[in-house]
Image (tube, rainbow, N blue to C red; front, side, top):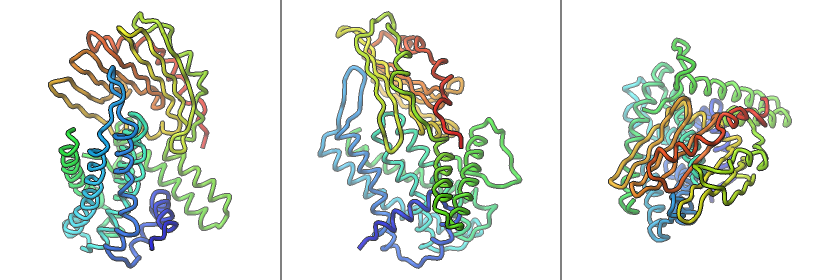
Length: 409
C-alpha cells in the first residue's frame, strides 16, 4: 500500500531542501515499479486532473463569447491521454539522461536517472494546480517548470556522478530533450481535443549582468540556496520554532515575499467611471484565497448590449514573485490563425498579453509591478482601441503600491 505521508514528506523535502534530499534519494534502494507506484503516478496526475477541471468544469473565458468548456467526454479523454503520455515522458527522459552520462563524465545508472527525472519534476507537477487560476496560473506553472530545472541541475552531480562543471551543459541538453518530448505530448493531446530554458548556473567563475533575465534568475536561485541552508540548519538544531521560521523564509524567497493583498475597497478607485467613453454599468470587488495565497480582484463592465468592455484588476499577492520569475525567464509566445492571433511579450519592462479575433473582439492585459494584472476585453473596431482603453487606468498608481503589504523577510 502506498505511504501517502511519506510521499508528501518526500515532495516537501525535494522542493524545500533539495541539497540535503538528493543524497538521501541517491542512497535509497528502489525499483522503477516502486518509483511509479509510490510517487510518479500520483504527482503526474496533478496537471492532467487540474487541466481537465479547467477545460471541462470551469471553462475558458473568451471575449464577447463567454465561458467555453471542452466537452466532458473529450476533456476526459484528453486528461487520460496526457496523463498516460506524461508517465511515458518521465521514463524516456530517464533513458536519455542515462545514455548521456558518459558524454558529461558521469556514470550510467538507469534507476538513478529515473529517480532524478521523477523527483526533479516535483515542482512542475505541483504547479499544475495553478491551471485553474486565470492567465496568472500559466505564469505560476512556468515558474514551477523553471524550479524543476533548478532541482534537476542540483541533483545531476549527486545521482549521475558527473563533475560539477559538467552539470550546466548536461542539464541544458536534457531540458531540450524534455521540451521536445513535451511538445510531442501537447500535439498528441491537442489532436484529440481539436484544439532554451535557463537553469541555474552555479559556477563562481561566471558572472551575469544583474539586470539580464539570466542574471535575475541566478540571483533568485542564490536566495533560494541561502534560505535552503537556513532550513537545513534549523532541522539539525531540532528547534521546532526555528524550523517553522526557516521554512517560512524559504517560501518567502520562492514567492518573492509573503503578501497581504489590497483590500477590495482599495482596488475600486482604480476602476474609472468611464472607459473608452462608455459609462460604467457594473462594479464588484472581492478578496479570496487561491492555493493558500490571497488574491484580490475588481471587475467592471462598461457600456451596454450594443457595445461593452470588461475591465479586470487583480492583485496576485504572494504570486508576485513567481510572476517576476516568469518575467525574468523572458516568457514570450505568439500564435496566429486565419481568425486572429495571440501573443505574450515584454514591453518597457512589463509583461503584456494580446489576443485578437478578426471578427472584432479581443483582450489586452498588462502585469504592473510584477504584482497587479490589468485586463480590458470586449468588442472593438481595432485592437488599438483596447490598448487605448487600458491606458485610461492609473497603471502608475497601481505600480506605486507594488510593495504595500509585502512582509519583510
